[in-house]
Length: 154
Image (cartoon, rainbow, N blue to C red; front, side, top):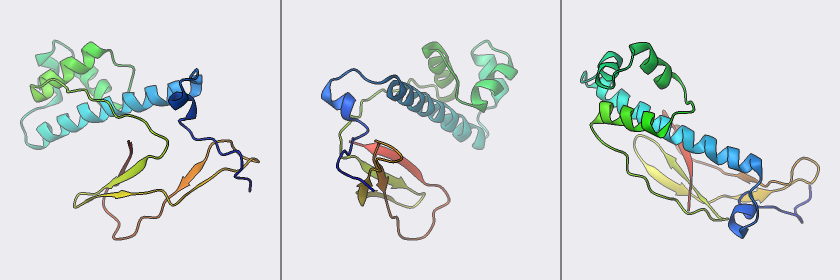
């Protein structure tokens, strides 16, 4: 295993170089997933409290119920107007957008229903035979939560 030419995943972004298309697509997908999770989680909260159904959302934004089902079924190429309409109908709110500055030494936040704990990466490994991208190895100890959300934090 070779570690001499370790390339940090964010190096082109942080250096100001042209960003490779694959990394642009990665962050587009990430953003799309964040928006989808925001909308769906808001809907599920309202639905669980018996305050809202998909038919209610459809009626509120002048759409057919099957369109709402498709939108809430999987992340897609939503237009900004779609996100705004859904959140307005579901939560009676508009999203607040913030930025998370990227850095080359991210923390990983592991969230369970009971706790939120930050873990530093144990090590980065780069193998010249398999990839130029480092792999971050982490060890999480303790009881297994029902759900673990991992995200990069600056």
